[in-house]
Image (cartoon, rainbow, N blue to C red; front, side):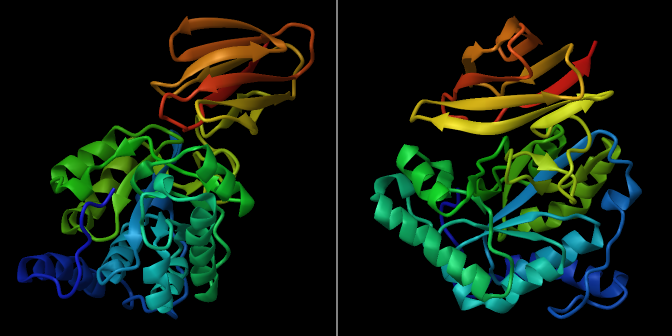
Amino acid sequence: MQKTRPGGPLTLARAACALVPALLAALLLPGTAGAADPVVTTHQNGGASCSAGYVGLTFDDGPSATTRQLLDALRQNGLRATMFNQGQYAAADPAMVKAQTDAGMWVANHSYTHPHMTTLTQAQMESEISRTQQALTAAGVPAPRLFRPPYGETNATLKAAEAAFGLREIIWDVDSQDWNNASTDAIVQAVGRMTSGQVILMHDWPANTLAAIPRIAQTLASKNLCAGMISPTTGRAVAPDGSGGGSGGGGGGTGSCTASLSAGQSWSDRYNLNVSVSGATDWTVTVNVPSPAKVLSTWNITATYPNAQTLVAKPNGSGDNWGMTIQHNGNWTWPTVSCSAA
Protein backbone atom coordinates (compact mmCIF):
# COMPACT_ATOMS: atom_id res chain seq x y z
CA MET A 1 0.00 0.00 0.00
CA GLN A 2 2.98 2.30 0.30
CA LYS A 3 2.77 5.22 -2.08
CA THR A 4 6.37 6.33 -1.80
CA ARG A 5 9.15 4.70 0.10
CA PRO A 6 11.52 6.94 2.05
CA GLY A 7 15.02 6.62 0.59
CA GLY A 8 18.27 7.98 1.94
CA PRO A 9 18.72 9.73 5.31
CA LEU A 10 15.72 10.48 7.51
CA THR A 11 14.68 14.09 7.88
CA LEU A 12 15.51 15.68 11.23
CA ALA A 13 11.86 15.50 12.27
CA ARG A 14 11.56 11.80 11.41
CA ALA A 15 14.92 11.06 12.99
CA ALA A 16 13.78 12.68 16.23
CA CYS A 17 10.59 10.62 16.21
CA ALA A 18 12.47 7.44 15.41
CA LEU A 19 15.02 7.94 18.21
CA VAL A 20 12.49 8.26 21.03
CA PRO A 21 11.43 4.58 21.15
CA ALA A 22 15.06 3.47 20.80
CA LEU A 23 16.12 5.67 23.75
CA LEU A 24 13.21 4.38 25.83
CA ALA A 25 14.11 0.80 24.95
CA ALA A 26 17.71 1.36 26.00
CA LEU A 27 16.57 2.81 29.32
CA LEU A 28 13.77 0.39 30.13
CA LEU A 29 14.81 -2.95 28.68
CA PRO A 30 17.31 -5.08 30.63
CA GLY A 31 20.00 -4.83 27.97
CA THR A 32 19.33 -3.28 24.57
CA ALA A 33 18.42 -6.03 22.14
CA GLY A 34 21.11 -6.81 19.60
CA ALA A 35 20.89 -9.12 16.63
CA ALA A 36 22.45 -11.93 18.65
CA ASP A 37 20.41 -11.37 21.82
CA PRO A 38 18.21 -14.29 22.89
CA VAL A 39 14.46 -13.82 22.68
CA VAL A 40 12.89 -13.24 26.09
CA THR A 41 9.44 -14.81 26.17
CA THR A 42 6.95 -12.63 28.04
CA HIS A 43 3.22 -12.70 28.58
CA GLN A 44 1.45 -11.05 25.68
CA ASN A 45 0.23 -7.49 26.22
CA GLY A 46 1.44 -7.14 29.78
CA GLY A 47 -0.24 -10.30 31.01
CA ALA A 48 -3.65 -9.90 29.32
CA SER A 49 -5.71 -13.06 29.51
CA CYS A 50 -6.11 -13.45 25.71
CA SER A 51 -9.64 -14.60 26.57
CA ALA A 52 -11.03 -12.65 23.61
CA GLY A 53 -8.60 -14.30 21.19
CA TYR A 54 -5.75 -13.22 18.93
CA VAL A 55 -5.17 -10.64 16.21
CA GLY A 56 -2.46 -10.39 13.58
CA LEU A 57 -0.23 -7.30 13.59
CA THR A 58 1.58 -7.01 10.26
CA PHE A 59 4.27 -4.61 9.02
CA ASP A 60 5.05 -4.31 5.31
CA ASP A 61 8.07 -3.12 3.32
CA GLY A 62 11.02 -3.86 5.61
CA PRO A 63 13.68 -4.20 6.52
CA SER A 64 14.49 -0.50 6.62
CA ALA A 65 16.55 2.02 8.55
CA THR A 66 13.86 2.10 11.26
CA THR A 67 13.34 -1.66 11.66
CA ARG A 68 15.56 -1.85 14.76
CA GLN A 69 13.50 0.82 16.55
CA LEU A 70 10.29 -0.99 15.58
CA LEU A 71 11.59 -4.32 16.90
CA ASP A 72 12.70 -2.71 20.16
CA ALA A 73 9.30 -1.06 20.61
CA LEU A 74 7.44 -4.31 19.91
CA ARG A 75 9.60 -6.27 22.35
CA GLN A 76 9.34 -3.60 25.02
CA ASN A 77 5.55 -3.79 24.82
CA GLY A 78 5.28 -7.58 24.68
CA LEU A 79 3.99 -7.71 21.11
CA ARG A 80 4.79 -10.09 18.28
CA ALA A 81 4.07 -9.40 14.63
CA THR A 82 4.44 -10.70 11.09
CA MET A 83 6.97 -8.80 8.98
CA PHE A 84 6.13 -8.84 5.26
CA ASN A 85 9.57 -8.07 3.84
CA GLN A 86 10.56 -6.96 0.36
CA GLY A 87 13.19 -9.24 -1.11
CA GLN A 88 15.38 -6.41 -2.40
CA TYR A 89 15.71 -4.93 1.10
CA ALA A 90 16.18 -8.35 2.71
CA ALA A 91 19.03 -9.09 0.30
CA ALA A 92 20.63 -5.74 1.18
CA ASP A 93 20.33 -6.24 4.96
CA PRO A 94 20.12 -9.95 5.85
CA ALA A 95 21.25 -9.29 9.43
CA MET A 96 18.13 -7.24 10.07
CA VAL A 97 15.94 -10.02 8.70
CA LYS A 98 17.56 -12.39 11.21
CA ALA A 99 17.04 -9.76 13.92
CA GLN A 100 13.32 -9.89 13.21
CA THR A 101 13.06 -13.57 14.04
CA ASP A 102 15.51 -13.20 16.94
CA ALA A 103 13.07 -10.65 18.37
CA GLY A 104 10.23 -13.19 18.16
CA MET A 105 8.62 -11.96 14.94
CA TRP A 106 7.47 -14.02 11.97
CA VAL A 107 8.96 -13.28 8.55
CA ALA A 108 6.86 -13.39 5.37
CA ASN A 109 7.12 -12.62 1.64
CA HIS A 110 6.03 -9.26 0.17
CA SER A 111 7.57 -9.64 -3.34
CA TYR A 112 11.06 -8.58 -4.42
CA THR A 113 10.52 -5.12 -5.94
CA HIS A 114 6.93 -4.25 -4.83
CA PRO A 115 5.39 -4.18 -8.34
CA HIS A 116 1.74 -4.27 -9.31
CA MET A 117 1.74 -8.07 -9.48
CA THR A 118 -1.44 -8.38 -11.53
CA THR A 119 0.26 -6.62 -14.44
CA LEU A 120 2.94 -9.33 -14.65
CA THR A 121 3.05 -12.68 -16.40
CA GLN A 122 2.94 -15.77 -14.22
CA ALA A 123 6.66 -16.32 -14.83
CA GLN A 124 7.41 -12.79 -13.66
CA MET A 125 5.20 -13.29 -10.62
CA GLU A 126 7.03 -16.48 -9.74
CA SER A 127 10.37 -14.68 -10.09
CA GLU A 128 9.27 -11.98 -7.65
CA ILE A 129 8.17 -14.62 -5.17
CA SER A 130 11.11 -16.98 -5.66
CA ARG A 131 13.82 -14.34 -5.33
CA THR A 132 12.25 -13.10 -2.12
CA GLN A 133 12.03 -16.62 -0.67
CA GLN A 134 15.71 -17.05 -1.47
CA ALA A 135 16.73 -13.70 0.03
CA LEU A 136 14.86 -14.43 3.25
CA THR A 137 16.11 -17.97 3.74
CA ALA A 138 19.64 -16.84 2.89
CA ALA A 139 19.36 -14.54 5.91
CA GLY A 140 19.01 -17.62 8.09
CA VAL A 141 15.27 -17.58 8.80
CA PRO A 142 12.68 -20.30 8.13
CA ALA A 143 11.19 -20.37 4.64
CA PRO A 144 8.12 -18.10 4.68
CA ARG A 145 4.69 -19.67 4.29
CA LEU A 146 2.77 -16.41 3.85
CA PHE A 147 2.68 -13.96 0.93
CA ARG A 148 1.12 -10.52 0.78
CA PRO A 149 0.73 -9.04 -2.71
CA PRO A 150 1.75 -5.37 -2.95
CA TYR A 151 -1.22 -3.00 -2.79
CA GLY A 152 -3.44 -6.01 -1.97
CA GLU A 153 -3.85 -6.65 -5.71
CA THR A 154 -4.45 -10.27 -6.66
CA ASN A 155 -5.96 -12.50 -9.31
CA ALA A 156 -6.18 -16.18 -10.22
CA THR A 157 -2.79 -16.16 -11.98
CA LEU A 158 -1.07 -14.78 -8.89
CA LYS A 159 -2.79 -17.32 -6.68
CA ALA A 160 -1.45 -20.08 -8.92
CA ALA A 161 2.06 -18.61 -8.62
CA GLU A 162 1.73 -18.46 -4.83
CA ALA A 163 0.52 -22.03 -4.71
CA ALA A 164 3.61 -23.15 -6.64
CA PHE A 165 5.68 -22.07 -3.64
CA GLY A 166 3.27 -23.36 -1.01
CA LEU A 167 2.37 -19.85 0.12
CA ARG A 168 -0.86 -18.65 1.69
CA GLU A 169 -2.04 -15.26 0.46
CA ILE A 170 -2.69 -12.75 3.24
CA ILE A 171 -4.51 -9.49 2.60
CA TRP A 172 -5.98 -7.71 5.68
CA ASP A 173 -9.23 -7.05 7.52
CA VAL A 174 -8.31 -3.57 8.79
CA ASP A 175 -6.15 -0.96 7.00
CA SER A 176 -4.40 1.38 9.45
CA GLN A 177 -3.85 3.91 6.64
CA ASP A 178 -0.37 4.57 8.05
CA TRP A 179 0.94 4.55 4.47
CA ASN A 180 -1.41 7.48 3.85
CA ASN A 181 -0.03 9.65 6.68
CA ALA A 182 -2.59 8.48 9.25
CA SER A 183 -2.03 10.03 12.67
CA THR A 184 -0.91 7.99 15.65
CA ASP A 185 -4.41 8.37 17.12
CA ALA A 186 -5.98 7.05 13.90
CA ILE A 187 -3.64 4.05 13.84
CA VAL A 188 -4.51 3.17 17.45
CA GLN A 189 -8.21 3.55 16.67
CA ALA A 190 -7.84 1.18 13.72
CA VAL A 191 -6.33 -1.45 16.01
CA GLY A 192 -9.25 -0.90 18.39
CA ARG A 193 -11.68 -2.01 15.67
CA MET A 194 -10.09 -5.45 15.38
CA THR A 195 -11.77 -8.64 16.53
CA SER A 196 -10.34 -12.10 17.09
CA GLY A 197 -8.76 -13.68 14.03
CA GLN A 198 -8.44 -10.42 12.13
CA VAL A 199 -5.30 -8.99 10.52
CA ILE A 200 -4.28 -5.32 10.34
CA LEU A 201 -2.09 -3.67 7.69
CA MET A 202 0.73 -1.47 8.97
CA HIS A 203 4.15 -0.57 7.61
CA ASP A 204 7.72 -0.80 8.77
CA TRP A 205 8.70 2.83 8.14
CA PRO A 206 6.11 5.45 9.28
CA ALA A 207 7.10 7.43 12.40
CA ASN A 208 3.46 7.56 13.55
CA THR A 209 3.25 3.75 13.51
CA LEU A 210 6.35 3.51 15.66
CA ALA A 211 4.90 6.02 18.11
CA ALA A 212 1.65 4.04 18.26
CA ILE A 213 3.18 0.76 19.48
CA PRO A 214 2.77 1.33 23.27
CA ARG A 215 -0.84 2.41 22.82
CA ILE A 216 -1.52 -0.54 20.51
CA ALA A 217 -0.42 -2.86 23.31
CA GLN A 218 -2.64 -1.02 25.80
CA THR A 219 -5.63 -1.12 23.44
CA LEU A 220 -5.33 -4.87 22.86
CA ALA A 221 -4.88 -5.55 26.58
CA SER A 222 -8.00 -3.55 27.40
CA LYS A 223 -9.97 -5.84 25.08
CA ASN A 224 -8.29 -9.07 26.32
CA LEU A 225 -6.87 -9.59 22.83
CA CYS A 226 -3.31 -10.74 22.22
CA ALA A 227 -0.97 -10.42 19.26
CA GLY A 228 -0.72 -13.81 17.56
CA MET A 229 0.63 -15.52 14.48
CA ILE A 230 -1.16 -15.83 11.16
CA SER A 231 -2.10 -19.41 10.38
CA PRO A 232 -0.78 -20.57 6.97
CA THR A 233 -3.77 -22.92 6.86
CA THR A 234 -6.60 -20.46 7.46
CA GLY A 235 -5.01 -17.04 6.98
CA ARG A 236 -6.44 -15.98 10.34
CA ALA A 237 -4.68 -14.87 13.52
CA VAL A 238 -4.23 -17.65 16.06
CA ALA A 239 -2.22 -18.29 19.22
CA PRO A 240 1.57 -18.07 18.71
CA ASP A 241 1.89 -21.84 19.03
CA GLY A 242 -0.53 -22.27 16.12
CA SER A 243 -3.55 -23.35 18.16
CA GLY A 244 -6.88 -21.68 17.56
CA GLY A 245 -7.33 -19.77 20.81
CA GLY A 246 -10.15 -17.35 21.50
CA SER A 247 -13.07 -17.02 19.15
CA GLY A 248 -12.88 -17.15 15.38
CA GLY A 249 -9.51 -17.76 13.81
CA GLY A 250 -10.83 -19.85 10.97
CA GLY A 251 -11.75 -22.78 13.19
CA GLY A 252 -13.39 -23.06 16.55
CA GLY A 253 -15.65 -24.96 18.84
CA THR A 254 -17.58 -25.20 22.07
CA GLY A 255 -17.60 -28.28 24.23
CA SER A 256 -16.34 -31.26 22.25
CA CYS A 257 -17.34 -29.94 18.83
CA THR A 258 -14.78 -28.45 16.43
CA ALA A 259 -15.13 -27.15 12.86
CA SER A 260 -12.05 -26.86 10.64
CA LEU A 261 -11.66 -25.15 7.26
CA SER A 262 -9.56 -26.24 4.30
CA ALA A 263 -9.18 -24.80 0.81
CA GLY A 264 -11.08 -26.17 -2.16
CA GLN A 265 -11.14 -25.17 -5.81
CA SER A 266 -10.66 -21.48 -6.63
CA TRP A 267 -11.72 -19.26 -9.52
CA SER A 268 -11.20 -15.57 -10.27
CA ASP A 269 -14.48 -14.51 -8.66
CA ARG A 270 -15.15 -17.25 -6.08
CA TYR A 271 -13.63 -20.11 -4.13
CA ASN A 272 -14.70 -23.27 -2.33
CA LEU A 273 -14.08 -24.06 1.33
CA ASN A 274 -14.34 -27.54 2.81
CA VAL A 275 -15.54 -27.87 6.40
CA SER A 276 -14.84 -30.84 8.64
CA VAL A 277 -16.69 -31.23 11.93
CA SER A 278 -15.35 -33.47 14.69
CA GLY A 279 -16.36 -34.35 18.23
CA ALA A 280 -20.12 -34.59 17.68
CA THR A 281 -22.66 -35.87 15.19
CA ASP A 282 -25.44 -33.44 16.15
CA TRP A 283 -23.84 -30.04 15.65
CA THR A 284 -24.47 -26.48 14.58
CA VAL A 285 -21.74 -24.55 12.77
CA THR A 286 -22.01 -20.77 12.49
CA VAL A 287 -20.08 -19.17 9.64
CA ASN A 288 -19.37 -15.43 9.70
CA VAL A 289 -18.48 -14.19 6.21
CA PRO A 290 -16.45 -10.96 5.95
CA SER A 291 -18.23 -8.25 3.96
CA PRO A 292 -18.66 -7.84 1.02
CA ALA A 293 -18.11 -11.57 0.40
CA LYS A 294 -21.23 -13.76 0.11
CA VAL A 295 -22.09 -17.46 0.34
CA LEU A 296 -23.23 -18.59 -3.12
CA SER A 297 -24.01 -22.23 -2.40
CA THR A 298 -23.47 -25.08 0.06
CA TRP A 299 -23.47 -28.87 -0.03
CA ASN A 300 -24.10 -31.73 2.43
CA ILE A 301 -25.83 -29.49 5.01
CA THR A 302 -29.09 -27.81 5.85
CA ALA A 303 -28.33 -24.10 5.61
CA THR A 304 -30.11 -21.05 7.04
CA TYR A 305 -29.09 -17.40 6.82
CA PRO A 306 -29.91 -15.18 9.84
CA ASN A 307 -28.41 -12.23 7.94
CA ALA A 308 -26.44 -11.51 4.77
CA GLN A 309 -23.06 -12.29 6.38
CA THR A 310 -24.00 -15.32 8.50
CA LEU A 311 -24.60 -18.94 7.55
CA VAL A 312 -25.86 -21.49 10.10
CA ALA A 313 -25.19 -25.09 9.06
CA LYS A 314 -26.76 -28.26 10.50
CA PRO A 315 -26.25 -31.89 9.44
CA ASN A 316 -28.66 -33.26 6.83
CA GLY A 317 -27.64 -36.90 7.02
CA SER A 318 -24.69 -36.58 4.62
CA GLY A 319 -22.03 -36.81 7.31
CA ASP A 320 -19.69 -34.34 8.99
CA ASN A 321 -17.83 -33.08 5.92
CA TRP A 322 -19.46 -30.34 3.91
CA GLY A 323 -18.61 -27.22 1.98
CA MET A 324 -19.56 -23.85 0.60
CA THR A 325 -18.78 -21.59 -2.33
CA ILE A 326 -17.84 -18.01 -1.46
CA GLN A 327 -18.14 -15.10 -3.89
CA HIS A 328 -15.27 -12.96 -2.62
CA ASN A 329 -16.25 -9.58 -4.14
CA GLY A 330 -12.68 -8.42 -3.64
CA ASN A 331 -12.24 -9.78 -0.10
CA TRP A 332 -10.36 -13.09 -0.10
CA THR A 333 -10.27 -13.31 3.71
CA TRP A 334 -11.74 -16.62 4.83
CA PRO A 335 -14.85 -16.69 7.04
CA THR A 336 -14.57 -17.57 10.71
CA VAL A 337 -16.42 -20.62 11.99
CA SER A 338 -17.61 -21.80 15.40
CA CYS A 339 -19.23 -25.09 16.35
CA SER A 340 -21.69 -26.01 19.08
CA ALA A 341 -22.86 -29.51 19.93
CA ALA A 342 -26.49 -30.25 20.71
